[in-house]
Image (cartoon, rainbow, N blue to C red; front, side, top):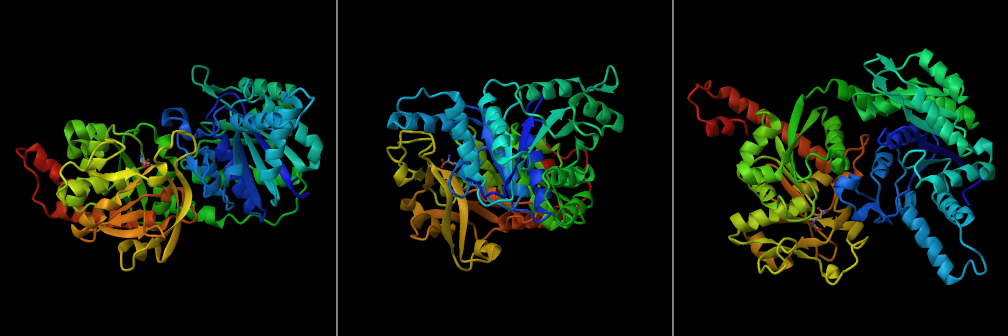
Length: 568
Ligand code: GLN
């Protein structure tokens, strides 16, 4: 059982999906933490997959990896970015996991003589998992995935309904997040979907005490009053979360609406005034970055699916806050590079504005890999800051092997399992793995940094811990040949068996990491590698603008390639 003092806030969503329930929950957590409370958050996912690890980015967006190696919903990334408590495998569970446990119990004979049913067996298991994750905190936020009315989420709603009676009304609070659409033909915001959604929720025995209304523009008091009346919610508990320019503005926006004050009143908690200074600092840097902006080319195959790189794009923005600069991300399609070359693909993605650094994120499969390898080469040859993450390190290693170390057909055994020149190879413990789910090298592992390298200077540490999600690695059979040719291994596992970080010494900033540093970056504490990468991009931008300012004005006859060359 959770400690007696733990209070539960259950967050449900209505009307449509993707209205930012996860972000709202994370911001509530941030506000309560800013009042000195210890907070955690759990995401309950109604789908039947055991975890999102086997889903494609088209289905699910990013898979967020925790220190303890769970592959989880991207909302856990929001939680970690907004609250201090680190997430574990207990903070996210799915219908699949719940049934897996209940069925295993049944096979063991735990329910001998009984019929196993949704109520109470499935709901008991849901509650057991919620209490387990809530241990030792003042407030546990419980976000129910999906939208009220979905068949899949019914057992979750039933479980949280039961919990109110178990923990007591003074220890539980229901918050319902809905959408108030604007109908331009009528020039009106519409409250009816919210009314219906609250009615449906009430039908399950859950009466929300607070309604958070998502809208594109601020809503007026009249509308809040109407919703209050129809939904039996106090008028000051109808809160508006309208679109803001940055997600990091949201804690302040919700505070202005009085949300945290209402929550502590309703839960009967005494706290001091919130300390919102860190969020205000972030807002100031967002509104007027004193060092201007940089543009990072992110080269990948799912470039139109920005949700699949959520932690990464956020880590870049955090590094922007730390450098007091705005970070623009230009998504460059690696297959477009294969079709028309690096410069043309970058020009297309940036509208000819040019870029200040190149980043290759994690990824899977051969599609688009040649384009990524070309991008790594382009960064190396032109002294453009380069950051390769997981697959990005692997692409940079292949490029270096081919074009510097003279291993002409270098590749990864992910793309060609029979290659003799697999400078990237399957990890030893991955051989013979035939169950796809949860079987990668996952979670936090220690890494020793090589003295005197740029990486060790950036981290200012000897040993670090970072999160992983991969099956392939730098092939040690080529380690000598590649380091002889000038590649530096700047971080490895403590037994020196796994290459974790590479860098190029004769380059302003060229680093590849086998792990995912983006999972540990937060807006209040940006990750040192990203911070340094953005600083290098700012330097590159200065040099780039200086050199183009010195160049004589272009005449009309300048050919296209020369024009493009001046942009980098
Ligand atoms: N596909 C590569 C591997 O499995 C890289 C994975 C990643 O980028 N997360 O090793």
